[in-house]
Length: 239
Image (tube, rainbow, N blue to C red):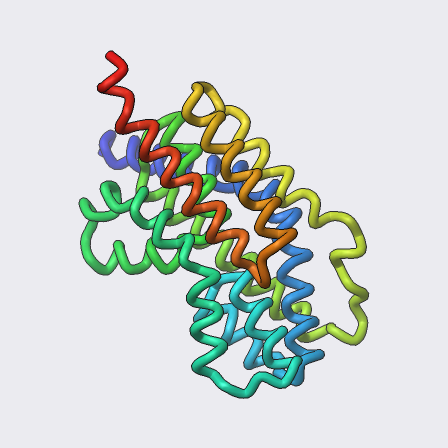
């Protein structure tokens, strides 16, 4: 009986932690979800189709790109799928980092967590790993809550798209990058982390200026991974 009470208390504390970490993130996530729903209706999609896209795809950048391509007259679904696949290549890097934790879990749970791994849930989970270690309940809770917030935001944006002005004009969207900065800064505790972050930032800025579409994301992620890998491998040789 005492063991069951302890387990319940632990689960309650995890969910409190999930809410505490996710709510600030939602301040930036909700305007993007509303905008995605509005853009989808403007592109000619129905409320059901936009909500289904959010439920099945669950990837903000990909949805914005797909909706933009549809509104510009691109009719080839193969081209849309290929473009969104390239934009989401960064998920391979996130999956590689989380693989040691996921592979210890049952296969259905691995699939569920992999589906729910987006930038926000990944950032929160990695930050939590650095502080307290990996907890599957925290990971699942964060992914589930962000999924629900995104689904509801896109649904409401699509449903009331004629009544809602562009939410990004409110300036609330700054909360999302600000939250990522709060998660990033405490991790810049050594030379490797500082250099990798600097390389990623410079490549992202360069890519934004000179590369089409969202290729800057992929270039920055790959460059940072290569630099970080080289620096980590060189450490034993320095001793």
